[in-house]
Length: 87
Image (cartoon, rainbow, N blue to C red; front, side, top):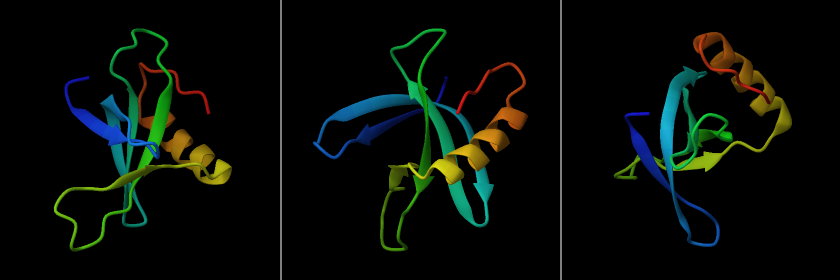
């Protein structure tokens, strides 16, 4: 994981994630990230770009809708041959 992103949760805590993959579906950017401190079996999350035109930096939120997670998870599974993605 070369690229990193710092995510701020609802409580204001900063969490550093490594970016595993990126994709764009229906003009929406998604990234698959994992905890930067984990090794082999890291828990991964799908983040969705919800930025507005006036935002200077990208704004991401965790995808929580089960159907969206399933669909985007399948896309990432197909992209990543050497990584097992469970969703």
